[in-house]
Length: 255
Image 1 (tube, helix red, strand yellow):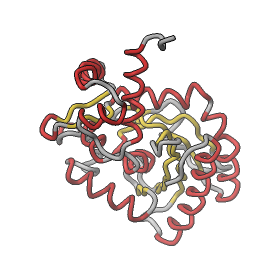
Image 2 (tube, rainbow, N blue to C red):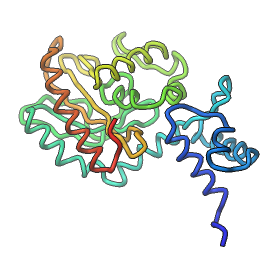
Image 3 (cartoon, one colour):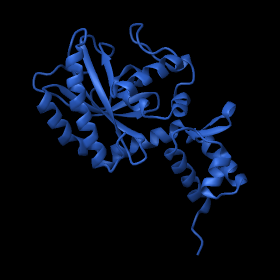
């Protein structure tokens, strides 16, 4: 018996294939990999592009995941209880470091904070549960963006108009964002110092699903005027361990 709703199944196959690739790919590659007629692939890509689940990079004749796919992915951990799953690990992170910890997901150009565990006497943070902040201004946002393929980052931030600054600081262009994300990858974690709130520093690490896609990021924030390299490295090690724990808990693939 043939599978019900074959077009729906093929569309999901395309999305899963794009999610598994490190870069956007040509339609012919999708057709060969999935053994689908090229005409059907183009038709489905047109529909998915129109709904925002796929982005067409016309100059490169390639296709990658679109913003709607990110929003769908960001909704999953909230509904499936990733915040509840993260509560214990974040509690232990706070106890071990004495600093505030939080969990955020990527939502379009922004990060959405879904969990905050505050240390006794810790500073009040603007990153309370339900708050959205521009992804490029936060450690959590940079950590997740650094884990995305370059083509997908371009789709989210195609030009200077895509960026938000705070007090004249922050990433201002796609080129500057590429440089910032390369630094995150080389360092192994994202940092932010006094950009969201003066006198507070943060480090963050992405939580990855089974395809290596960032579904969330764990961050630690502390009072550190001017930043302190040794302190930052120590906090980053603790954050990395917590993010890896959560990655394993959701059966994800570590970087």
